[in-house]
Length: 101
Image 1 (cartoon, rainbow, N blue to C red):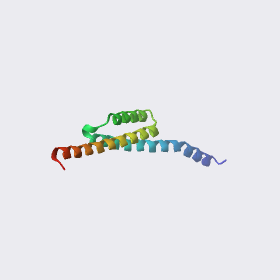
Image 2: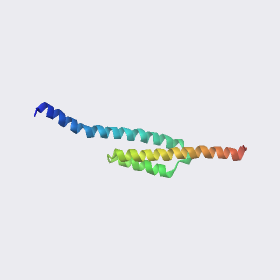
Image 3: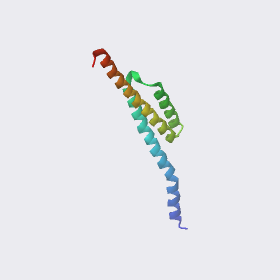
């Protein structure tokens, strides 16, 4: 077999897992940052389950399991979005109760 062709084939085969890991890491970082921002936007309505999910995502990322970390970060983002929705709903409910329709 042609040595240069074999070398290129082996190099490509070994680089695929590294490229996949880099993508998962970037995906995690992006989703985690968005979850943090959205969680802060919830203000006094931050859910403890969101904080727990974010800690678990960070732990998974630190151990190198970026797929699991990204999945947990997506769950945290969804919870954070729901807590922001709750904050907005409660603000409107308070306004209606205090001021009237």
